[in-house]
Image 1 (cartoon, helix red, strand yellow):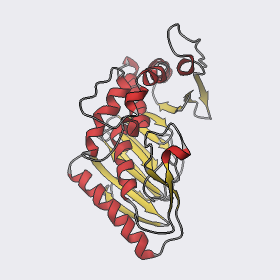
Image 2 (image 1 turned 45 degrees about the vertical axis):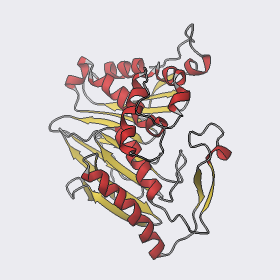
Image 3 (image 1 turned 135 degrees about the vertical axis):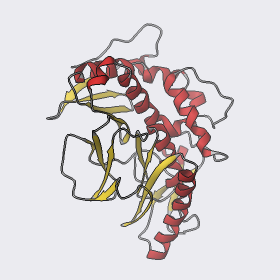
Length: 311
């Protein structure tokens, strides 16, 4: 399938033009691209193509609705702020997880987009005959696993670390954050991967934990104002990491311990199932019992929702 809709009257052209939806790869997954939105979607079952059509319908207006509320989405989170777009409301809802820390709703945009498209697919009658559905938005993944089915994912930074979930499960979101990824980070983690109730929750939790994997006073870690790197960044004049030197074991341990404390607190609150923190070849695992996270070779199977992720 291919979709490239004309600009709708009354909508900003930059938010409505350029929508593309195609089937890709040997498994014929659905690829949707629209501006910064980059989705790879999969489902199994006789209603697969119908679900793909539903995904296209759900994804098509997302960018326009986000652009309509972009100024407030880039502003610091305030509980009193009210949004009208369904994705913007998801972004706003999970920001309470940050408590008194500075965040903007943009911290959860990728995960919220994935959650929105997954929810639309689950509402379709064709979902009843499927065993698995996944929506991967650049490494932030919303997924659903039916009873008796399994879903697997390889964890970023752990070549043999495979996350395996047997359905039904409450955990329906995975996200990864780190200083070398697509988004700016205030910490030095190579990657922090989080499993949570939703992709939006995993998205914000991974970012918060990754920000805390840090050595704030290390003289060789380079940082720069976010707006100098990207004038449109919602982080404005806050410093973000641009370079990390080779660290000794003590420094790596101290940085990982700081992030682990944040991950443990979020897990105790019931917000996440657990997290994997990786820094220069060392890792810390919080939660994620052995039955979920196992050390095993990654061989491509039909229940894989990704081979790696790093947002």
